[in-house]
Length: 593
Image (cartoon, rainbow, N blue to C red; front, side, top):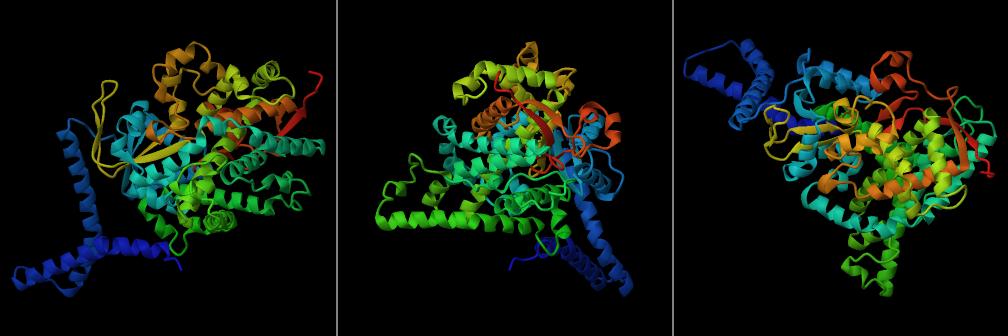
């Protein structure tokens, strides 16, 4: 039986934070009495013991601030300015962040702070400081030029272990290198250019969309595309898909058929729902920093959802391990013992060839699942959302599809490379709606970020977390021009490309950068491109079903920037998604074109 999270917090913190101050105070008072310097009544002793705990904590905070300021000055640097807060422990900021996460517009709560304080700032959350930045030069330092001085770090590892274990996205050092080396061979050009997988599942998804639309109902594109990416990802990873599309599409919530739908009860969709809830729970922990275990005192809420995911994955893992044992018994695994990747071998086959540790295998599969399913599903969901909002761009994109590929032919890799507007459309989607809008590292050791724009260097104390907001950086008007918050694919084709992006490539990092850049970047481009081409061959009109769609509150229209024009509730946990789904009506294309 797992130890309750609250008990772990007590074991980690009570000795140093509670017992040590009280014990030290007791010893000091006893010595003073024995030396006949000071003798206090018992009731004052009790008060002194109680006050010693917050007193010691306050002294620790003050001393840490003084020590960091002194260390910064010694290096000719400064500390990043602190975001003002009103309540003890910045609990007002915690409330604002949680409100923004649950009901507000994505990234808006920190956008106001950046506007008031600067592009790089210190945020104090429950006495846990972090340096938040949207500066490309500092994101470049974190991801590339000072890569060895930054890592995920123990704080992030602790927050995300329930979800990601020790997989590639939650590990550092040799463990990260091991996971990276195992997955790299499966994202070579040859492996990600075989489109049979994409084609089969795309045909299934589009056929179901047509059938649902012919019934007179809109389709939840986010649900459809999430199942397309789940089925294609599991076929790519496991060698066979989990057939989540076979359950049929969901009906609109206002339809009497919605309750009778069996889609949500399909094992693959139960897994997907639990996986999403686990990501929401993990993201919520970041608002409580080191105190998250007190919030989940008796039960690890993320692990509860991951148990459902693990039950789904267990038969798949057992089957792979059984295949390995059969090959070993038959003497067919001699070449495999060397850890080599064979032709036709899946990532799961390779993992069980390297190790029989089911926890390690499961962790890696779950990590790659987020990368292979959730991020691509997000990009395609937001791309179709943009098709509904920009019919002129949709017509231009469809014209390119029909000109380069035709109304029915399966696209090739060469077709995709030749479709400049398609790539620009995808890039603009990734710019305004990056699949992973927020990310984080920590200073492995004390580090100094370079001074920029005439400002002094910034000192980052060892162990301090350094979150960075890709979505906020992607929308900065000083980096992308005055129209930065407008959706315009042409910015990746006209003079703006050479004015803004070419001289400063780190202003666009939807796949991260540096040694930890996403291995599946080209896989994602291929899958998104392939599906959009098939979609535009099949449909010629796209409209948001506003009678079904969960719409933003009226006050959003009075906000500044992108928030004012949104027609859906954009949210994020670890990846971005549309709350309530993306309900669309699409008109089938005529084959006379």
